[in-house]
Image (cartoon, rainbow, N blue to C red):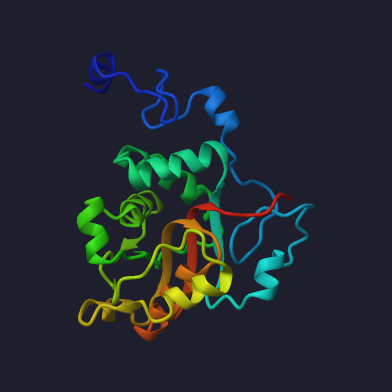
Length: 238
């Protein structure tokens, strides 16, 4: 049956549309041009670092100077070039088909921090943005991530308690101020996080302000330990 379906509806590269063997994949050239994060990474945000690991925890410059309230963090891609185009297509161009393969990349990137008892929790969006976009890309990623990783999904534990301005163009301090108190536990369903390890899921990490606000909300709901995973990380050249 699957072979018949593939004959009628062949799989195509997520980036360029070229026909490929596997559904939800990238063709060879697009795979080569997509900046996957590999090797030694910062244990808090997943940004790539030079050198080789010796078993000790290492942090990037940002995570050594900015307090991160979460435990550990990973990212699948560097937010540039092909990766940036994929993220923006998922977020703004109704390319929801990107969510499943992207989540597979995220599972691979986060395999050393995921535990079987974790709950995947998406970063929430304000209801007004939900009306305009019709979906929350972080929720799509979290749903697929939970499926592929074999962990629970708690999709409605957090809410955006107030509308926030877009973070684009803001400096680091302004980003943190913009998100202060904006994310809260759901009045009823936030209790589902009590005593649990949580994995926050989002599309992009820039300053970490959104993840920090969500982490504090998870702790307010009684979460035991919070880690993070994003599809992409904005980072300096290494």
